Amino acid sequence: MHPMKRNRPPHPPLESAGGGTFTPAGSRKTVAGQTVWQGLATMGSLGFTLVGCTFLGLVAGYNLDRWLGSGPWLTVLLLLLGISAGFLNIFLTAARLRNPPR
Image 1 (tube, rainbow, N blue to C red):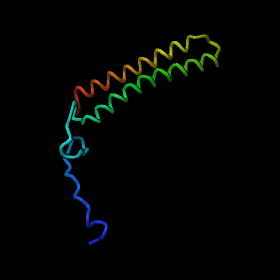
Image 2 (image 1 turned 90 degrees about the horizontal axis):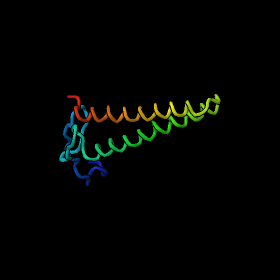
Image 3 (image 1 turned 45 degrees about the vertical axis):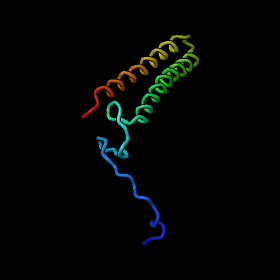
Image 4 (image 1 turned 30 degrees about the vertical axis):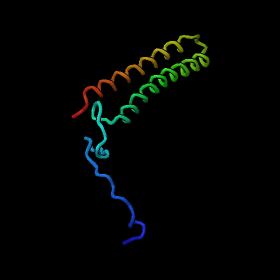
């Protein structure tokens, strides 16, 4: 027997969580078959996505207005587009969590 393998505890059994992913046995499932930590990660990423889309639209519009000299119109337009893209992403993610693929 190899000396490094002598005193190792056995690995915990794995169970299928659906979709080809595996989680340790005994982990609790929440909405859409996700664990608590996976659900928190999903919700956290939604906040970052909304802020990121809004900020990207604002910066892109501001820089285009400075480059073209077109006043605040592209800033307002791209800001609204970024906000709507962020909310669309939240809506689509919530719909996917409510009705998970089988």
